[in-house]
Length: 617
Image (tube, rainbow, N blue to C red; front, top):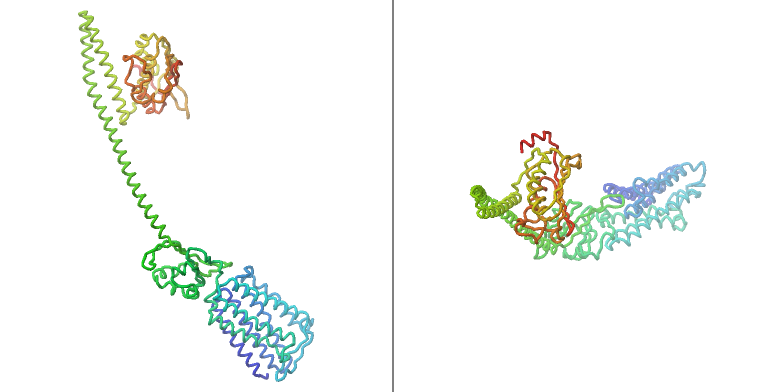
């Protein structure tokens, strides 16, 4: 070995390069750090091997060092392309799982070089020659050497293209960073071109390793001065300067890499004094906010902060920034002034509270009205009781007087007493109807189910109405009573509804026919349903009166005598009784066509004898 100053320079370079590699290795999780570490190792191996090559005295020794040297020569271009693609996020397909594909040609190159004695495709011939005070390895280049050279230049140029294209997408502040990277790769590229073209003033001395001195200087400047891995450009497309919302992009180390005009105006500094600074320093005016969101990667909430002399509300959103490989790159802060919106929402809340208060007042008024209605119904019930008691006594006394007078044959006095009896009977019916209506409205009406004979109910009703039928010269027809039998239900209410309907038919029909029918049907789910109908041939009901037919105190016909006019509660009570029993009452009528009234209710089959039921009634 014969060391010269040139060899020592190269050895010093090979010692400095691992420092760059180690610094990048410590930050290998960051984009571009791992390939940069590989590139530093490649430069160290290349420089060290070339230094030992220049110091070799025999061809075999020089060849051994050349082979070691080529480990760095073939890997450096690949490391550069990998670094450029990952750092600029330009070629997402080339991730850390596929990067080994770039090493196929370098591995083949090493194989071709190590087996060159067999095929002579890498070096056709090799010699050791003197170049001034240096001993240099000289060779006649083979085909595969040019394949290796073309591939290396392709990697270097592709990586440089990615870097240059990236310049146009990054803020001007970061152009020095990227320009330094271009100089770092351009220096050895130019040196290698000079060496291969034979235009070097130092003959066969390869200038490429020496040009790496410039590369290392640029990389060191980038790492330690420009903080390449601490302030890394984030795509400008993430920031929309035209937005009214404040936007600030912060990398994973807390450095502000971009800010829009709205955010700068809120912070109170120009963008040039914000970008490249620590976010905690820029937002020092709001220490509670800095502490609150120090480690938060994602958030969405409303906060109140002091801006100048006023308090303002902001909708703050924090979004994580990921690259194409889903690696965390930083945070995007977006804030929107919602002070006016908050005031509007507060006013809306106050209006809602006022509306709720009004609603509660209306509910209270409704409850009071319903309570008043119940009081009214209770009053009517009490009044009816008070009226009915003396009227019942009057009717009884009239009957006694009538009996006594009949024995004395005082005909005129009997007629007067008959009028008294009819009047008191009318008042008694009115009181009974008012009482029943009041009980229904107050919810005091209950069902009393028992077994009853349907035919007997029909017989009782028709017997009670028969005098009125004879007076109006009407014919009575009864249908279906023999086929029904005994059922379980509220006999009193069924009798009351049927009596009201048959009485109306007999009252409003003259010289006609009244038909009373009943049938027991099987309804849904095999349940029994008892259906009655009353059909008459009277004048019918006018259409305008059909809508209010079931209203309390409604009269179906106006042109009837006072002696026939009722209180107008019969149909209202009948309909409510039917619904209470789970059924319904319907009326169909047209002027000149008579009237059909029908009602039904669910019943159950009774397991008692008809004779027993008749005895109970």
